[in-house]
Amino acid sequence: MPGNFMTADTSFPDLSGKGDMKEKLNAISGYLYVLLEQLRYTLGNLGEENFNQTELENIGKTITEPVKIKLQETEEGLTELTVTVGGISSRVEDMDGRFSQVEQDVNGLNIQSAGGTTYITGSHVKTGRILSQNGLSEINLNTGMAKLSGSYQINNPETSETVGGIKYDTNGEGTAQEAKNRMYLYTDSGYAMKLQADGNLSLQGDELIYIKSGRSVVISVGGVRWRFSADGIYRNDQKVLSPA
Image 1: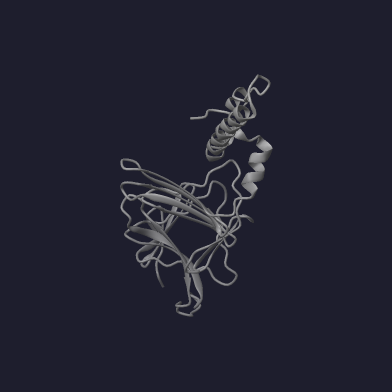
Image 2 (image 1 turned 30 degrees about the vertical axis):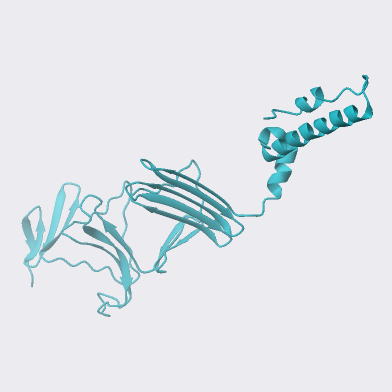
């Protein structure tokens, strides 16, 4: 089997010697057969090493058919890359059914995963608007502002029980103490709520600040503890004022 074009050079017939025309024609004919075999082999086995970098780039620009690369191992899983005129899709899957997939087209970027964790990391991650599929949540991180449409629920990552959340509705009593349209923080599953500030903490209401408790309201200032109960006001557990 031919190896390279050197065979065509070294096997060129010597027509300078003695011999009739028939012998010379036979030598030329044999050489042409060798040259044809070498040419067929070369054209059928062209590789990257046969082209310079410029030509490789030009050939790459002429690829118009979809490109699909699929690597599969019975013990590891599947890695698949598909490039078409419509977009790019990559998928990595293991034997346990966990997978991650990225799809990109002119409409945007779609990232999916199952059984694993999706991370977006970097020293400077910049994004714009993030909108959930049901249209209830919207976060604008590009302007440093978070906007929620609907409700935001917080779950305990260890037990999956609902801890609480933030929501709004139009089911308020519509009284002076509670407006009809409201937004509020809440807790569930017996969790308490605590607001803590390293500096000052302020509550402000243009019309009314309403505080309601089932037993009592306690305000501690320095070493003095004030407790407001149904039967009176206490200062350090000493009643200082009774109801009229």
